[in-house]
Image 1 (cartoon, rainbow, N blue to C red):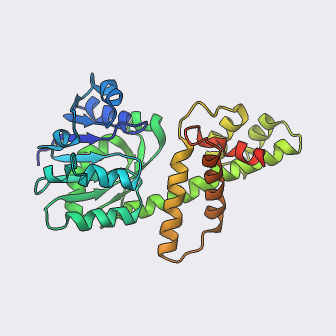
Image 2 (cartoon, one colour):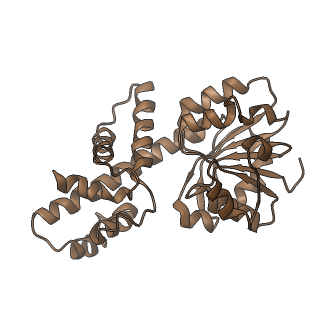
Image 3 (cartoon, rainbow, N blue to C red):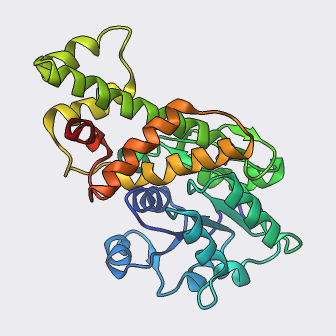
Length: 293
């Protein structure tokens, strides 16, 4: 593999698009694809785009996948019409940056066994703004040589990309723990501010004062500010992501027979928000889920 790998980028959503732009801006040759033409058009001035995922993957040294769900990962790789697996040559790095859970990674690895494709598991945390700045946390699982081959991509995208395990799937396991914490912290912020509101307190003051003490957290500061402002249509992280991710937490916990009661309670809040039709609104809307009673 060359020191400047040719990168195929699959998935140009809210985080995928700025990540692809960051790679192109750093001088890596990027060919990008998304199912939606508007997403491809939006990045066309920064990177080459293709009409199919298979075209994007063909001949690439590193194929990065940034989709939303396990089903989407499976369709991208193994779909009958446009599955890219048939384009992945012996030695190609398949860099899976989506949060899809360890079960999906294990299934993918099993299906690609014997093909020579080198899987690096690298889910991300940090949001769209940090993606654009190359300031993400990336939790990396994979063989040492495979991770080394992916480093030119990882180093552009992340300020911190530790190897958390030698197997593809170890990154997903770390990300599951990360999402449990994030999901519970957002729900806790929503619950605290809902209680404060019900007691007649000034929410802005509650947020300001408690954000300086032992109760402070990143999520209370960040999502709490959106809850106070009611900024649910300024979508920085959609509720549907935590509907999916807390489901992955539950699945992983069930697999190892670990009780996760706080995560279970938070999952119910996100699911209730989904049932209210709020999937595409900001995840801080869990505050309103609690206020709805």
